Image (cartoon, rainbow, N blue to C red):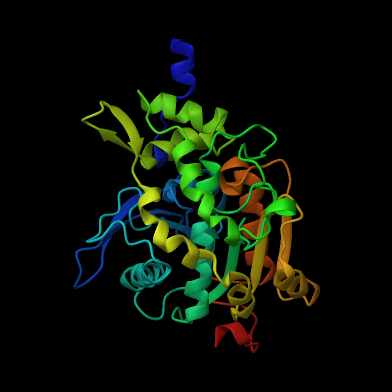
Length: 342
C-alpha cells in the first residue's frame, strides 16, 4: 500500500519549468498563472486542453527549454488562474485571454512565437492565429484536435471517461463509422462527464486513476500535472475537479464549429499532431493533399500526446523550429520575408 502511494505521489513542477509567474491583465480582475522555461530562442506558447493545466507541458518543456523558451499558461477556470468569471469558457473569451497574456508579458511586438494547443487549447490557438492579432507569430501546432475524429471522438471531455486500454469509449455508437461527426456527438458530453470518476480520497488516488482509467499513460507526467487539476471539497472531504466542465456546456459547440476551415486559413506554418490515423474530415484531407499543413501521426500514445510521449512531442516542436529557421525574433534568412511574417 505505501509503495503504491509512493508510486503515485505528486511531483513538483520546478524540476521542469524555471519559474511560475502571475500575469495580471491591466484594467481587469484577471490574473493568469504561467509557467516559464528557457532563456533563448523563440517562444513556444502552450495552451492546454479542457480540464488540464499548464503543467500538462512540463515534461515536454524540460526537453525544449535548451533551444527555445517555453511558456504554458493556465487557461481561464483552470489551474491557478483567477478571473472575474471562471465559467466563461467561450472561444471568444479564451482567445482574448491568450492575446492579453502575450501582450502583457511581451508588449508589441513580442518575440517570435509558435502557438501550441492541445484539444480545447488547440481550438483556442487556431482562433488566436486566425485573428492575426499577434504580430510576430511564426507557427501553429495543433495537438489531436479535428472536427471529426474516430474512436477517441474529440475533446478532452471524452477522455475523462473510464476507458479500456484499447481507447474505445464505453458508450455505444461513438465510433466515427457509426456516429458521424464529433460535432454531432456534443449532446453526449454530459453523460460522459457524469460517468467519469468524480471524487478522490487523496491526490495519489486521483493520479492513480488518471493513468489506470483516465486520460493519461505516463505516470511521471500525471504526478506533475494532475494535482493542479484538482481542488479539495471541504463539504465532501475529498478531492474533485478544479474545472466544472459540465457547467460550460453552452460553449462546447463554439470550440469546434468550423475549426478545420479556420485552421487552414491561418497565415502561418502549421502542423497537426494526431494520436492515431483515420481522423481527418474532408476539409483537412483536401488541405493536406494541397500541402497547406504538415500532419504527423504519433503512435503508441493517448489523446494527451505532450504528456504520454514528451520526448517525441518535443522533437517535433524543435524540428519545426529548425526547419523553418525560426530565431528569437523571427525567420533568420537574410533578405527573405515569409508571408506569415506580414
